Amino acid sequence: MSGRFRELHADGLFVMPNPWDVGSAKLLASLGFPALATTSSGHAATLGRPDQQVTLDELVSHVAAIVEAVDVPVNIDSERLYADDPSGISAVVDRLAATGAAGLSIEDYEPSTKVIDPVDVATERVAAAAEAAHRHGMVLTGRAEGLLYGAGDLDEVITRLIAYRDAGADVVYAPGLSALADIRQVVSSVGVPVNVLASPKVPPTDELAAAGVRRVSTGGLLAWTAYGELLRAATELRDAGTSTYGARAMSWADRSRMLAPPPAD
Image (cartoon, rainbow, N blue to C red; front, side, top):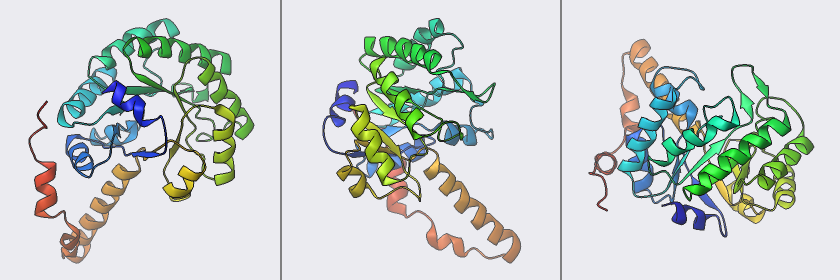
């Protein structure tokens, strides 16, 4: 699957939505998406926790279940790779690679201190992740989180993405990019495939493709859309005593796709 995943980045744009459990993964795969990715916030929500509160053991089990359920490459939202020191990253990547996932990512945000790593620290960590990922044939995505957390401007983000590229990242990603001009600037500056996070503020995929973007992911957006619909439906039931929300329920045909047996090898 790793080779197949790497080939998807060679030319053009592909959409890689983020399921939050096995059922959503099977449904998305049945719609023909060529790859899927886990979502840390969506996965945490299934456990009733905020983002960045899932253990490594829980992540490994979650990824293994999704990989087993679908026949497309799976990329892992692996946050900061669960290691405080670069020397510990290799062992974490080894565990994630054993799930059969095709790729993984590494962030430069430290949730325990709520700060962005200094660029030299982050680059050393990306280099360690790249060495380990490439040993398994996995695609590594280097993430610059500054725009998402209000730390730094576009120039700093580009500087970081270039550093992560030079450290071995195969794909770069700056969540929070939305203006088409900024996206074009990132694409033209970094020289490797760029992932863009879908949101209501982000241009449609045809415009992103024209700008040179190679990959679009959804992060937790699909999960939170599903949870939002659940909240609206349950509120109607509680307050009005009606169930008009049932008109929007998944069809029997779609349920059958979601519940179908895993694909044969």
